[in-house]
Image 1 (cartoon, helix red, strand yellow):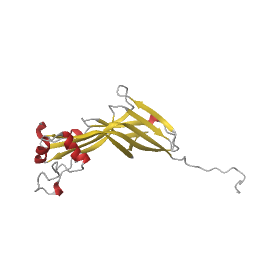
Image 2 (tube, helix red, strand yellow; image 1 turned 60 degrees about the vertical axis):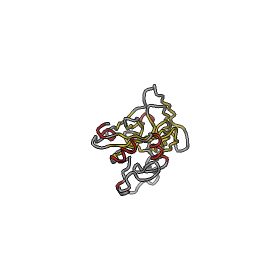
Image 3 (cartoon, one colour; image 1 turned 90 degrees about the vertical axis):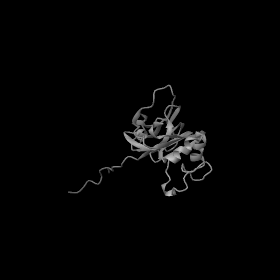
Image 4 (tube, helix red, strand yellow; image 1 turned 90 degrees about the horizontal axis):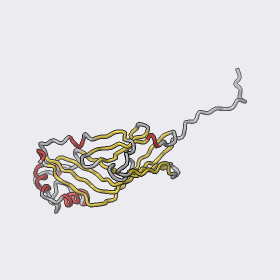
Length: 214
C-alpha cells in the first residue's frame, strides 16, 4: 500500500527549555559553626568578638592562630587545626528583614518584582531546616562566626513551561542566630544557589560557646 505523500507532515517538537533567573536581595550574611579545642576556646573567649570575626573573615586566619598570627598551641600539627565550619556553614538573605524577590526572562524582561517588608506575611515557604545548628555536644566548646552583609542570591530555574510565580517557594535554614533563605523550590523541586554576591554592611563577629553551656 502506497503512502499518501500529499498529506501534511507532522513533527513532534519538544517544548523549548525556558530559563528564568531569580534574584533575592536583602540583609544577611554567613554563619559558621564548629567544634574547637579547649585551649583555642580559652584564648578566644577573652578576645573582642569583632576582632575575632575580623581575624576569621577579613584576615583569613585560622581559629588556631592568635591575633598576631602565631599558633595558639605550637605543638599541634597544622593537619589537626580545626575549622569553625566543621559543623555547619550556611547563610544567605535573612528572612526577618526587607527582602526583594525578582525574576527575569532570558531576554531580560522582568517577570516578578516583589518586595517583602518585615511586618508583612512571608512569601510561601516550602521547607525549613534547623537540625544542624542545634546538635551541639555540650562536652565540647564551639565557635560561632557571623557576617553582616547585603546579599544577592541568584537561582536559575529551567522549565518547559513559562515561569509561574505561584510555583516558587522559599527554603529556609533556622540557625538560632538568624533565619536565612538558603535555596528555593520551583514546582516542588529544590533549586540551589547558583551565585551569591555579598557586600559587607558591618564588621563580622565571632564568639565562643563554651562546653557545658557556660
